Image 1 (cartoon, rainbow over the protein chains, first blue to last red):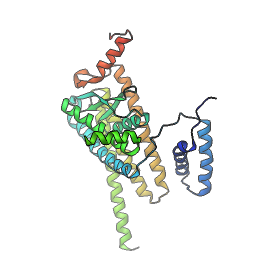
Image 2 (cartoon, rainbow over the protein chains, first blue to last red):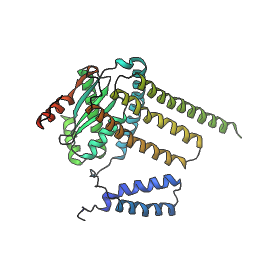
Image 3 (cartoon, rainbow over the protein chains, first blue to last red):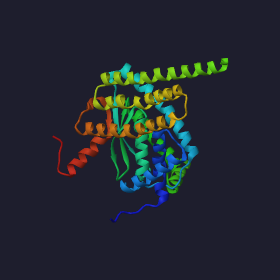
Image 4 (cartoon, chains in turn brown, cyan):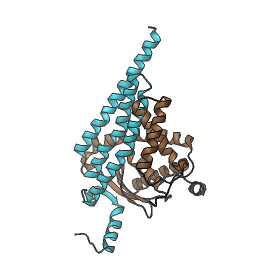
Length: 181
Length: 129
């Protein structure tokens, strides 16, 4: 087998997550159970090998908490907006497919941005162009170019937030320069 | 039983009641959206999205009513797995729907993907229709 071995440090987030899931499913966080869960996690990670996720090497917890709060607020606001659209507009709703070029070319950040945008009601990732890291997003109630620009800005702001949480140092400094300029 | 514990119980009950009603409202919204929206893409918005907030509120209500912290990790894990899988299924259905033209072009104010698709099809020697 000529697979690239990954270091324990890179694998650690996955193992920790598997142990947490194990403990949560048993509803038992005693040391013995967690140790057994860790053994199973290592066995699973060895047997069912996945391509390693390339992490940015940093994670800002404070930013992540703030991002999660903003995300939840956006989900609440947008959920009610879609509810309103369903009841009032219904069949006459106008949408658009908008191309949004992202800054980052890392698979992790493109995936995370697409996920967050899909989870916020009213926007859905239709297609991803990995070579140019462009997301094609179907937005509901996008009636004109102004709405499209708003949607594009929202996606790029989401990406900026994610870069601040877990982007590489190079991406972060590029972002700071862009914001500062 | 002191009056304070009773009032705390009442508050928890009231909060979880509100959470459950609003969570159920999200499911109702999804049903209305499925019936009223005109095409597959807009229906996907209605069908997949209320799960995020609706499920969050209902899980919170369950957690509040169980009154034991052991149940919270399971609820969090359940919600996170929903968050991880909902966009994937929505994306796959949306993408398949776009490719098989299950949408009304007259209800789109802009379609920036169409030109790209046409160009890619032209390069490979395929043309539309």
